[in-house]
Length: 89
Image (cartoon, rainbow, N blue to C red; front, side, top):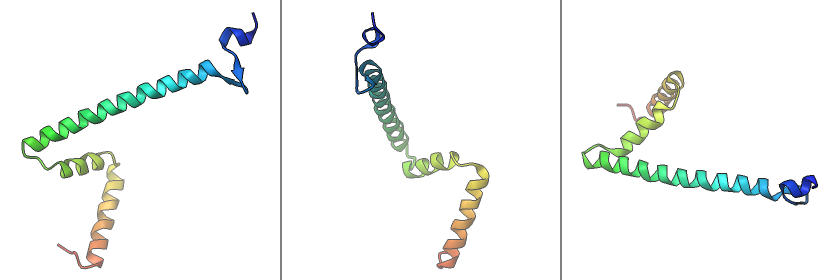
């Protein structure tokens, strides 16, 4: 038995079985991503249902991903820019 027949015949140097494996893994991850997206929608809807502002929750989630020092720097620049255009509080 040759190496080619053990795996699967290759076409142009590409193993069809290996490519199929990657495609199946990607498809599964896409399904998982869609399911997580639906779960997130449900949680935001639940939060909104009890009176929370989901836009603000989304901002907080985004901010929590940013390193504290970088977040402080960004907030300082935002305040500086707002002051420069007359949006001082």
